Image (cartoon, rainbow, N blue to C red):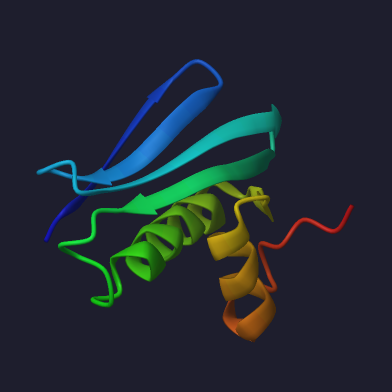
Amino acid sequence: MEIKQEQEHHRGRFFTENGWAELTYHFRTENIVVIDHTGVDERLEGRGMGSALVEALVQWARAGGKKVWPMCPFAQALFERSRQFDDVLYQA
């Protein structure tokens, strides 16, 4: 399933075309992105879509030289479990 991104001003989202999975974010500063929420429809639960959304945002953040602050509990748990996101993790 393809993940898309849209952004308007200081807010944005990564989402699936059918709307069954979405990650929302906002900019705290020009270079700090806060993950607000990750939601996946029950039809996709257990298939890794939430993780795929977080990974898409992380790749985007890396490419843009941004840091990520995972405030959403799901994203926060992923960041805590995996060292692969350490390079983009915002340290408050």
